[in-house]
Length: 429
Image (cartoon, rainbow, N blue to C red; front, side, top):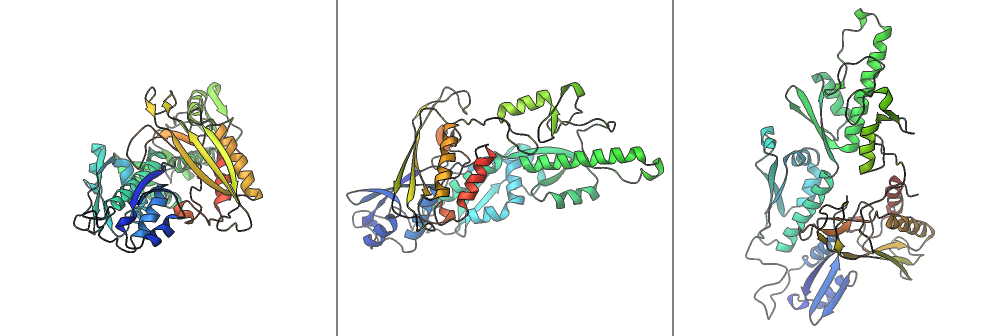
């Protein structure tokens, strides 16, 4: 899920020895100038890119101010710590270490207090994550960007996290760890607690159920002497049952024949379990196949305006540019939002597509997604930490014309196919 939103920063050209270089850097981004101050607006990634470019040379000491606005060379930046789920943070530290290192970079250290290496620390429920600068000359703005980048990644990870419990032998555990490297297996009261993304937990449960079913069916045709050597894999919550019983992947209980419902994808569930799951999202809880029309939680009253420009995007030099301008007004949250009855702050966003045949097809699909309220949602702003803000949902947009995929810009030859796949998952194709 995408949580990054547009933000605005102020840069005073009086703080820089080379105003021409500053102007050259900012010309690629949306900005306004009043007197000597530039108001720059963009995504978190775009603003971070600007900071990195400006940091290549230290700003001069301004004549009218005691220190540069972007950097205080005499103090290490202080960043507010973040309280997070101990379970999710344990998963991130052990399964997402590379991503964590990329987020913190060379100038900062992301630390968890108390540490999670000793498993008992998870019992408290939450831990605190701090951001320590390794370089006293690091800017406070850059430090806060590291914090927001972590929050964005944490929220994206936590929103898709699930925990289940299984009972397997040590030998079978090694096999499962190889089969499901995205999952974290930890011992817990003679069982194993498994943590990971929903889709991988679902695949694990399906694998265990198939293994149990195959073993049970095989036992009918085997003599007792040939069927006592191996213990089969199965979830701890599934009781012993005869070969004809089938377990519901949601509640993990045997499905009563009269209450069984089988989808087109051949996955079966208890009727009540499936009904509750479809109330949340009309997709198969096991494989993710869509059933019906998916409607999101985008607030009402928004606009999606489209214009074109003759300037090409990097990688699409033969074509012009499609400019999408989104506007979602402020309002009061409804039942489908996090805090019904409370006000939320609206948003204006701009995105870019190449004006080629494929770009035009993607534009039509995005229009359908907008009409189905799938482009935006109401959530938490990672730039300010405030709740009740209109944010992007999980359909990625190019909010910059330049900078490549790491800065939500072009060139990115795989972008159109990726966003098509994201839309297809939501039944838009």
